[in-house]
Image (tube, rainbow, N blue to C red; front, side, top):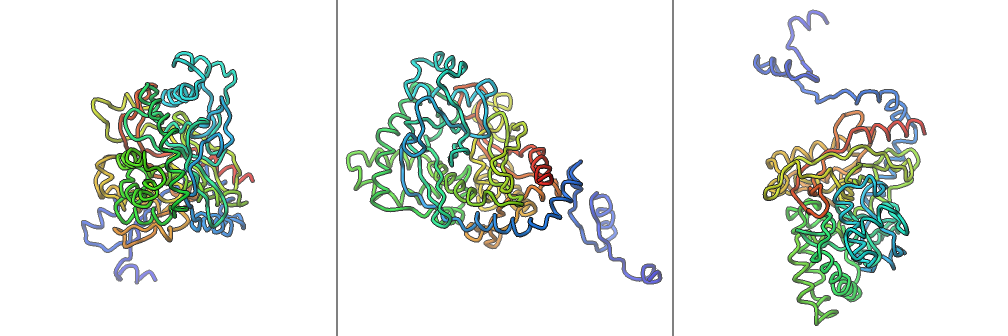
Length: 461
């Protein structure tokens, strides 16, 4: 053995620091590189206990199997007071639970706008005073009510909701209608044009879509998402193909159901490339909820931000939130805006990354880099790195540029802790001052501590 090592051809494995690998390259020595990282500091004991849990492998297979087999169908459009039992003075919001005192600028702006929409205040100042006092006001997380909302994610009783049913597992999820871009409630704007648009959506858009769906029947969102991935969307910040596919499906029914208003309805939907985002979010929520409640599973079933905190929920840990400070995205800014104008990350739209879309599917959408920054190679690298922290590849959501490989799906908190690789999220950037609206778009990572805290809880359980 000793003589073989001295006189034979060396077989070298390099791990960790690149300096050795680079020196061997210069000497033309063959090597095998292993991309290894030490676990996050302080997690060794918890990681060992979780990885040794005899339930874990089967529990994760069950949980991720439910997520991947979900069949979300768009079944209806209904007012929130009817669909969610939402009463006057109750508002749902994006992310983990938060109070008015801790709410960010865009969250406060959206709540003020919702107060004005519902007629609970005559002026923004009066709305802010009532929200601050808390009298007759209830705030709760959308996720606690089978609901998701983009950016601030505020839902009030008169808003109309997309209803998505999981035909495989029986769950139901909801998301509001998308307002479009510019000065919109979800980015914290609450001017007269915002309230006027929301009222039109409640009086015209919602009823027209509801009547159209009654005519054309449920729409298979899983199939639409799969097609859109083949056409260059990643279903978080690029929904152009998905919106076009949706318009093609519903346009004849809209014309038949609302002949007097069909043109303005279809013009509004067709003029908003992100219209499908909210339907896709509800579909993702339905799929992720199917994976909840599996004892011993370390699968992430929700990632969400309220503009102050970033939180996750894990299948084997019930409805408990694990939270840390939301980071400011790194990306491209609109007009004269810059990082100083940006609010920390906000919104429930990370439900797309939770099920293998968005930042996890950027390799399918090379044009996304023009919106969030970077190069096409960065988009491919982002997707490929996510296979290190996920439990499966989605059988329906496939990426042409990777040989039709399924998107990485099913984040495992144990794999995040073991590798140190954090989920990639692409997102819009809201202005930190209430009423500003969108100021840019970019990439952001969750705080590592939310995953290690969840790992500790799994170990203790």
